[in-house]
Image (cartoon, rainbow, N blue to C red; front, side):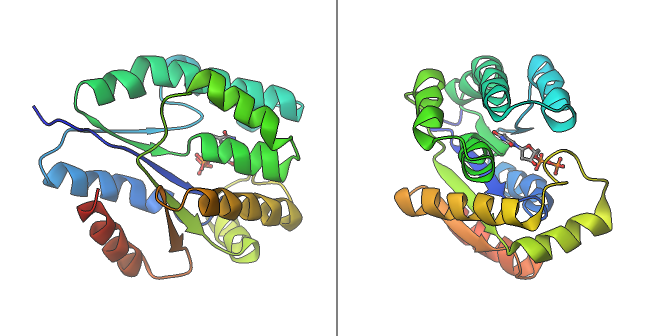
Length: 203
Ligand code: TYD
C-alpha cells in the first residue's frame, strides 16, 4: 500500500484556469504509482453536491453561504477526504477552505476571524499539504468565463468582487508560503503543467 497520501487543493478566481489542470495533475500522481481520488467543493458527497446546487443558484446571505459550504465540507471530510487519506489515497480537490476565505471573506466581506472559527471547528487538525493558486487578473478571467459558460451566482459578480477575492487569496498565500504555490494563470497550459510537474516531485 502507498503510504503518506497527500491532500492537494486547487484554488483561484473563476476563469483563472485551474479546472483544466485538476484531472491532468491527478493523472501525473497516478503515474507515480499512487491511488488518487479527484473531488471538488462545494461537493464531493451526495449531500455536499446538493448543497452546491443551493449555494451556486439560490439567493442567500453571506453567513448562510459560509455555514452551508462548511456543512458540505464537514460531510466531505468525514465521508471522503479523511477516509481516503487514512487509506493511503491521495486527495486532489478543486477548491477547499481557501475558497471560503477568498469568496465569503474577501468577496462578500465576512470577517476573517468568523471564517477562522468555522475552520477550527470543522478541521482543526488538517490543512492541504499543497495548494496551487491560479492567479489571474479579474478582467481576463471574466472574458474567459464569458466565452465558455453561463454564469452562476458567483460568476455573475462584478470585477470589483473578483479583485477582492484575488486579494484575499494572495494574502492567504503569503501567510502560508510553504503550502501555497502561485501559478500565473496567464501562462500557456504547457508552461503551467511543467511547473506542476516540478512541484509534484517535491511533494
Ligand atoms: P467552481 O467549482 O470553480 O465552479 P465551476 O464549476 O463553475 O467552474 O466553484 C464553484 C463556486 O463556488 C465558485 O464560484 C466559488 C464558490 N465557492 C465559495 O464561494 N465558497 C467556498 O467555500 C467554495 C468551496 C466555493
